[in-house]
Length: 365
Image (tube, rainbow, N blue to C red):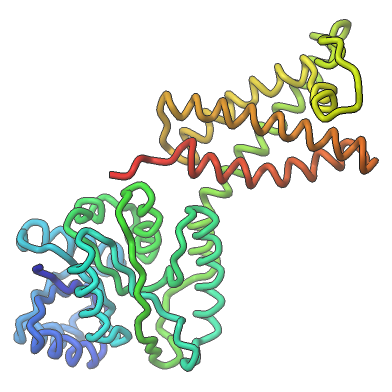
């Protein structure tokens, strides 16, 4: 398996020279991208270039994401026999032994996306900023995607050749690019493996460009869009319910239990008592609107089968919401609007999970 080590570098320190020298000495092919570091750093890049490192250059600083894309573009065009690319930082935080462990893992699992994860070594004191930042993004990332990755901030990653084109198409010019790369794993449908690596911090990780708010919002964006879509359609649903029950069906809006002539104290009758013509008509319209918004803006995918799946899910959620609300009102005695808020809050997460994992899930390649 032929591998290239891709290193984006912006104003690197002397440690970058030592790091490059050891990589070359161990027989690795190395491509570094000088991301507009300035003339004062030309000497460092000239020294690593003399060792055998391929140096690509940006005239001005364009961001880590663009530097990685420049590297992948060069590899696709000029290193066409490459099977695997390992991205590593230039500041010395990644051990060569760990880089080689990622390569070995790829040889055992061809085509897998390999992640070098930190924060598992309890003997290492992790800077508070890194611990909090990664903890928040790890939780949000899992909620948004269903993927469990311990270290979402690591720059040590192994990308198989099958994903090189995806790397060039992934959005982001700066640090958001690395997060977007992980967010793309679901759509690409490739296997991913996270290996624990040695945790090395230089100057208490003072050079980190991670922003808890910025990166958390990037991951949370899909959930926020889903929430906005749900709240908007929730409002439409209630407005239509009022309109239908007040004017359209003012003289003939019966609940289904009455229409079917069923009486009693069982669960089925409780469900039918919660469903009326106004409720059903409002839910059909708001549900159609919600599907369109989620398909176009939230999950950005959808087929004929997804429309059928959404219809089935909507019916199940509607019946479950009506039943649970009716049971809480009957047996707990709480006000109806309180019961509905509690039930809808719980079903919101259920609805999001099944839309993500079933309705709009893209088939694995």
